[in-house]
Image (cartoon, rainbow over all chains, first blue to last red; front, top):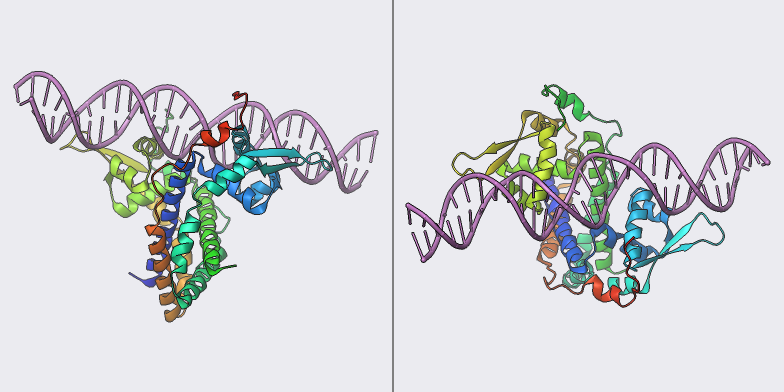
Length: 165
Length: 165
DNA sequence: AAAAATAATTAGCAACACGAAATATTTTTA
DNA sequence: TAAAAATATTTCGTGTTGCTAATTATTTTT
């Protein structure tokens, strides 16, 4: 197996493990992943408007609105209308929400940190340099926006009846 | 910022970039991410029963069934009842499905590989060693299965009316 | 003041993800 | 061998996500 293949496998392994971990966390906290992510974004970036929150999370504004609806019903976040520009609405963590995040085993973080810090200094540096390298590469990747093909193109050739249900 | 913090940020950056990339790919291919992932799993592991597929993907069997329904309707996968054990159903990529995967810009892979291979040998080795280190750590992490708390516990203290809609 | 832009919500839709129940088949056990 | 238990998948019902388009309210531009 080539080195680049190995690297890809490892990256996918990391992503998969993180994903599993997130799912576990979600089960434990009783929140869905998008809900947790919303709260974390709010925690790290502080209160922000719905639009900004949507941009930060790479989601449509409407999607964020609906996630916030559910979080608000659970009293984990609050909404505050901006007094200067009344179109804007600020989303912010409630006290309960902040507490939940704090008490929740943010885990990846804490657990990871202790293991990471057990490494030698030189190794820590090496890992970071490498991660920067990988992040740099992946960030630079960009599929051509041009659609390569429509499913239709491929599927049509083999579909006869084309019945739905 | 501590080194472990940096590492975490970088990992999240990588995951995020990958995620964005996947979304783009999904848009281009006209399939959803779970659909693509199902086909990729089938491609890499060969035909497998629904149950195994579900385990491989860490999803409930019912979820996989419904994803397969949609892929089958598009003629990208087929179902085959096992002749020995008639409870089992084998999912397999159709020719169209295989072709789609092959023609699709295998995403991360191809683009990543060319950039990765542009690195010096020693750097490639370093990156792999580091990724192995990180994957090792993350894989070893495991939240206690014990639920830390229910939302109820936290939320109840501040909810009054508890009305729905 | 009218038109255009901006911010958020609503409405409607397809897909996903799950658990529980139903169905069919095989294996175990009594 | 007949009954019970286990296994494999699907069906059903529910809630969540994520999207676009349309709506509402408010600012900014013209």
